[in-house]
View 1 (cartoon, one colour):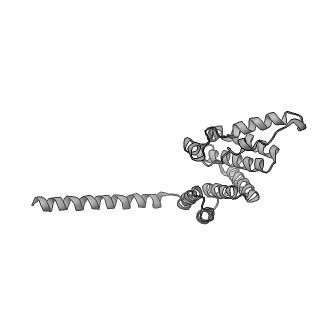
View 2 (cartoon, rainbow, N blue to C red):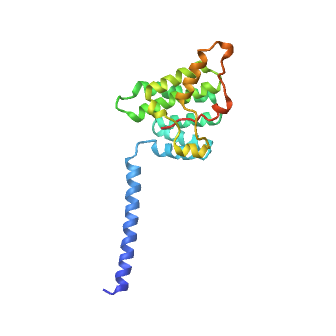
View 3 (cartoon, rainbow, N blue to C red):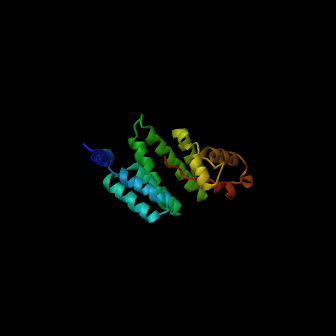
Length: 203
């Protein structure tokens, strides 16, 4: 076999191997993933790009494939929060919390993180609406459920949002508890420049 033919054979074999590996990888993803996961990932990407209508479309598609898909429910709630639809966000998070509390297994660590995040996010919505007692109650439930999942936004989020010391659920809960210990006339329950640093949670 001439070197030219051998070289061509090696190139064709390499291309064929790469193509087959790519097809195998895609098949493994689509065949093995749970119903609703693909559209939930798609919704998360659209949410991160602030494409809220498209994100809702993706999350709805996920929920048609898998009713009660917790990632899609959380994603849809985050869209409502980002678009200032507080009532819809609270309704979605309340539904998600009730569903998780009814169905979670003890060894489902991801599920417990989602539940903690749902409580935290509902607390943030209550906080923004001036319902501070409800916010504190949700923060406490979130921390009791999975405090580790609420340690604060990642380094990426800190860089993205330009906040080196973001407000966390624990910090906010401690602050509200301290303020409620004061006489009503001396309480300062809203500090806009601090409150603006608080971020949503999505495990």
